[in-house]
Image (cartoon, rainbow, N blue to C red):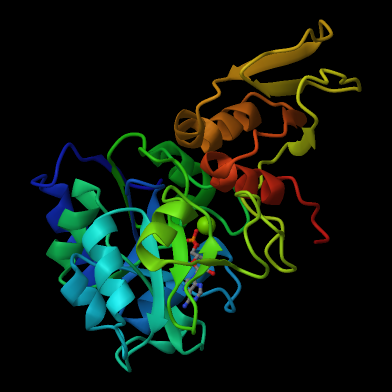
Length: 328
Ligand code: AMP
Ligand code: MG
């Protein structure tokens, strides 16, 4: 059985215990304001290797280091541009990850052998307290098996990773529900690598211009680039995206139909779910809803394509990847 300890706040004694597990090279899952992270001592390559093993994560996919302050982040880089200072003053602590040239201190396994390191300073009180108690940066990818749904509750972590994690700190549901925005500052131009709670226009307001991986943003629309649409965030049920208002679903097996803003008339046998036209509220709920539909035994989830517009960008990204086929 995985150990789960409820943690009510940053002063809770479980945080000390978690820090000693981390010091010994163990794995501790903890809440952040985005999703639950699977934490290990980010400067201990053996501990980080346990993250990869627990998640079944390919060695080519680097992990984010979580720090308690801009100064700790800076110490892990070999170059800290003026943009980084401006961004962290505005958005840290918070759901923004910066990719920067790594210092020699950062183990190769954290970087997946590359020259850069991804850094984030989470805003969640329990995450902050744990990083400080550990006295180290914590490597902490989402606490789920690779490619699967991200966890927004301690129960999601336990059911995805089970005994592979030494301790789960249960701080209740996470707030943002979607992973951090990732911005690459290691090249000539700031480049968005993953849309998240902080929108590209908020970044562009500070930076002037932000590239969206390959290609540009057009009216806030994502141009999917090869390699960015691989299957990820996937529920057990098959997820299909359909045109809004279609309601045209048929087939065997329990099917759920998810709509935004308005639920069209549906056949008797289809379970309808209405989500609000509120991107922030949907972001908070999305992964939890997909977990619930899996647990309830739905084989198919038919979901209307979410609205256009920048506020929905991170949700469109997660749903496109959650609905991608295995072969991609
Ligand atoms: P997760 O596993 O859910 O925490 O996601 C972490 C994300 O950060 C993955 O998409 C990684 O590819 C990305 N990432 C981590 N380190 C780097 C890096 N050095 N350069 C670019 N992306 C990174
Ligand atoms: Mg993940």
